[in-house]
Image (cartoon, rainbow, N blue to C red; front, side, top):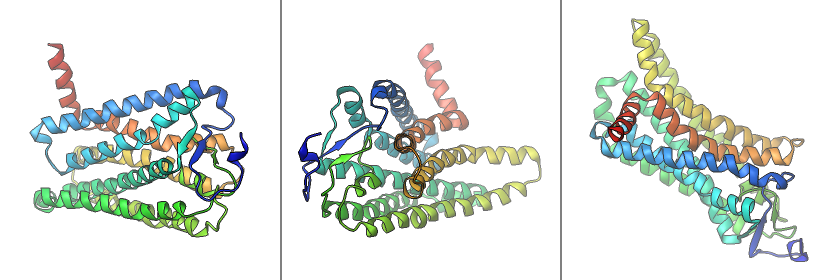
Length: 315
């Protein structure tokens, strides 16, 4: 690297993204599963949006929230993969300082937005199972719209301090980011000023904001399970539980890799850097790919509509 990458500077004009450290020779091969996951995510989530839009029977709270989830699952991988592919295929590692902060904002904003949508979907399942007669009066279209607005506003406002802090820091060590994208902790490590406030805010986001989301989802499903087990027959219990099984699978696919990656980057010192980077990509690429598959397989209305589209095309 040239000396310009290691000399003192306050606001670098560019950062250098290294991709996956130690696996540079395999970048082209790694791009194949990355591209596959991205294509599946794009096709699957667009299919969900089209199916819900075309079928008036699916114009209800559960499917409106599912459409919100599909939109976030389109933005999340799109915010990182084009730049990753330019690194893997063309060795184009530079990213403008402002573009880096913008990418970081989109990653963390839409990640938190997805978490909020999962809470909203858990609330929808709680009302549908525990108060079925009041579902249509509680979750009206205006209420769903307000919940969506609150999720967007919360994410947009809470992520803003990241950008304000990192825009005004001094970066006097290096502008080389050992990552495939502008991940928050990877950029924090480059600053030569006191970054404790950012670290504390990051922990607040993980434990208080995402922790509260997990808490509300847990409370909702505690009430849902109590209602299910109070049903008189096994068939009724299985049928009712089946209506929220898709959501449970999506929750596990979203939170487990994300929390694992976040906590590992902060508290575990002896993990190989390339493994940390791979995990940081997994939690942004795998859930957007899996979510439409889970809902397409597990949700009867969407599965039937999807089969109907293929059957119609085949006739």
